[in-house]
Length: 257
Image (tube, rainbow, N blue to C red; front, side, top):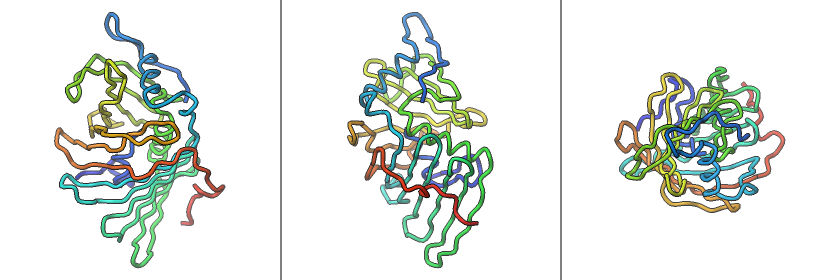
């Protein structure tokens, strides 16, 4: 299972799999006669998740397990996000020997690797691009398909995904992250989401949701199957989701170097 993103420090499992999830300013336009506007599709997709009141989320915690194609546990992962751009991500490998943490206090970003048996730690400051990528992820997770605050949404031509007719919407975020969401043409349900390279726009991964978890009157996918180049490379299954969790003032503090 390949998890490299950008070819840099952000190469832990959550950065390939936790792209799961705010202003309504839309740059997309309808394509073809009779096609709905991007704004209409987004409103329908958000309604499928929950009411507008329930989707006004300022913080989120998710905990999940990552599996390989054979169903073996690869890692335990967790992330915390707080509006507008604070983030903390944690990964523990399957044998419990290596912890990886990536985070941002909203100003600077860092990557921390800990050898659990010895508690030997290494902390590095992230580049501006990597920090912006974490900002993008927080906006994605708390936005629930809302258009990027600084970016665009483009409605593309109708496509077939997982055997269903879909409206693809391409989201481009300020930090360079691109995601193509495939929404069912009839119901606006999410059928798949495609992670694209922020450099050349090529497809890196396809995530296909299965099942759901309902919490705080919001419907979240329970599980995503992960595909790369048409081949299944794993699954991510969510264990727990907390909406609008209270965080301590130092929750996202930059660690000592």
